[in-house]
Length: 75
Image (cartoon, rainbow, N blue to C red; front, side, top):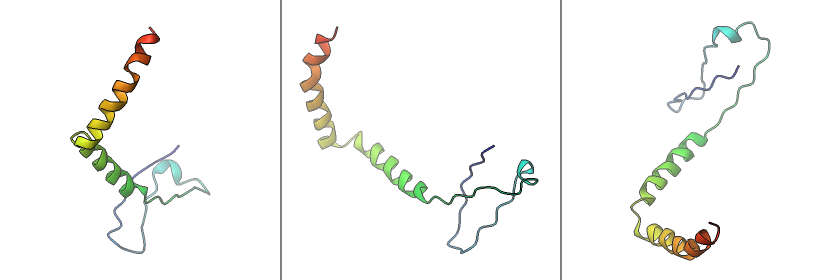
């Protein structure tokens, strides 16, 4: 069983985790600390902004025009 949960550290040096019932009888568990959630949030914000970015939209249009004929050849 894998349990994933995001905890706020509030800039503290310790984190206390309450183990679910299914883990309490286990002798060993793996704990992984991953701070990439902040990076993922930033990337999602950038992707949201791309939908209105004129330069990005122009690039997408250019690529679409370049491959328009290739797409019709496959049919």
